[in-house]
Image (cartoon, rainbow, N blue to C red; front, side, top):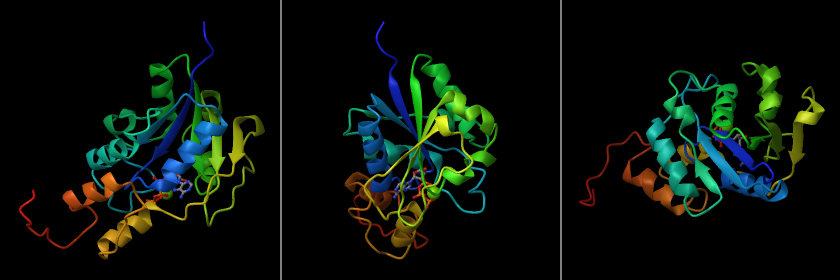
Amino acid sequence: MGAARRIGVMGGTFDPIHHGHLVAASEVADVFDLDEVVFVPAGEQPFKRDRQVAEAEHRYLMTVIATASNPRFTVSRVDIDRPGTTYTIDTLRDLHALLPDAELFFITGADVLPQILQWKDAEELWGLAHFVGVTRPGHLLDDAGLPEAGVSLLEVPAMAISSSDCRERVHSGMPVWYLVPDGVVQYIGKHHLYRTDPPVADGSG
Ligand code: ATP
Ligand code: MG
């Protein structure tokens, strides 16, 4: 029997996915010697109820487009296909059931790490995955209060990009080229995401 497969889990809203997500996943995969990173677009999220989130299917497809060229990156539908609110404990339980022999590494940015103790069934998270907190510009990377054995911290190349900024840029007609993968720029344009003005008929649809 070979060694357990080491699988990274990158959870997010991915509204839209951007190069900050991709660099973080790539860096953790390299340093932690992962065989694969599964990107898991969230369904409905407890901390994002106050704003409009693009349809799950759009977020899923943008994530597929952004990761398609990397043979070690895959996308899972477990969260968007599970009815109701997305909780990471359910994500990890589902992935564990699908990949019983794998060792899971849950990747999270510095902004999210301090929230984990408030997540549903927080005390059970550490048994299902090792957590890897990564640096993110504008946020302090701190694992205070988290179980030492359950969490590692990693510096990744600094990408001052957020999905909120990308949405705001598209909304105000500014470019998102080179912030998100080319195919995602084109997908956003094709489906008129993040805009309030009516689509312009250009005959290409
Ligand atoms: P939003 O502004 O809508 O919250 P976001 O850019 O934070 O979007 P999410 O989908 O919320 O993207 O993030 C998914 C995961 O990726 C989180 O763990 C987050 O901390 C991490 N992440 C997002 N952007 C970066 C970045 N630029 N560098 C490092 N980690 C990031
Ligand atoms: Mg975020």
